[in-house]
Amino acid sequence: NAGVMQNPRHLVRRRGQEARLRCSPMKGHSHVYWYRQLPEEGLKFMVYLQKENIIDESGMPKERFSAEFPKEGPSILRIQQVVRGDSAAYFCASSPGSGGRYEQYFGPGTRLTVT
Amino acid sequence: SQQGEEDPQALSIQEGENATMNCSYKTSINNLQWYRQNSGRGLVHLILIRSNEREKHSGRLRVTLDTSKKSSSLLITASRAADTASYFCATVHQGGSEKLVFGKGTKLTVNP
Image (cartoon, rainbow over all chains, first blue to last red; front, side):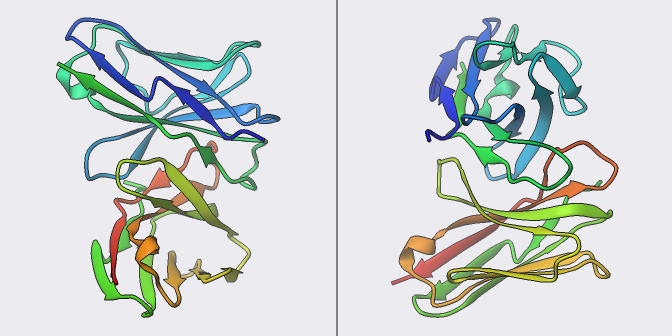
């Protein structure tokens, strides 16, 4: 059973470009979470999705950031018009259910560098 | 802020010694999870402890939870150089979504 897959692992974008980060959850997992980690800090929650639905986006910046988890295919975190402050590691996690009973399993992360 | 806090921020020990890391949080939780992160890598899930549990073991790891004090501890026994990593606690809060609220972590160095 493959773990959570993220690609690309490293992404370099110039200011103003768009960044698309992909996450394929573990097989059988329908809950996906995105987190952001700045250097030397813990992870900060961004968004929680189930198939085709956004459940909690309380950690998402109001502008330029969007996320989706379509019926088919990976979850996508999209950052439009990137700025230097968007440089960070973005981690995706997945779990098989909700109700506070399940572990979240993390992918290896995408390291975004904005030049 | 609902963010958990780990204590100490950094810990340096010799191989074979035990390492204890603590975590405090502010609001009622459904569960608390501990993760390890090697430098520049992803997070590895270590243990989940539910709010109605007081202690859990997994190999050389022992986690305790005191909901009255809103605190948890992670004990690593007989440490190895390979245990060198950052350790994070993360909580799922009652009444909220499934999001994890992370602390800033404890950086553990185990010297050979």
